[in-house]
Length: 154
Image 1 (tube, rainbow, N blue to C red):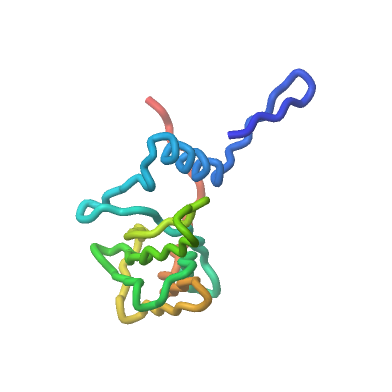
Image 2 (image 1 turned 45 degrees about the vertical axis):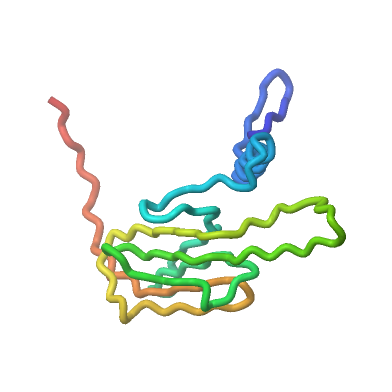
């Protein structure tokens, strides 16, 4: 969160990337290369950023997976949710004996996208290009929304 004074008022802005910076600083403070997070089964090191949107009757998910290959990524329909999991392998290039900076995250990841409609796994399509995973699935037909009605409070 950043603070910006305007006159006698202060505006606070939430910076989502600032959270990642804070986490990195805490990791460095505790001299721990990464904080593990569990998905209930395995320890995780990171999670990819995703965009999810509707386009032409399709639900589209795009996940940033830089430095990965499609063989390292798994897309699963599990308990009615769309699940992404995989692992980015560690690669370190160290010249001489000194490492000046290591910021890239490696290890297992897991993302679950809960859906409020049933999915036919055969209708899910996934492609991987230039470090971006794109998953598409058909959206169900939207039901007509009922007109708003006032409810009496007793």
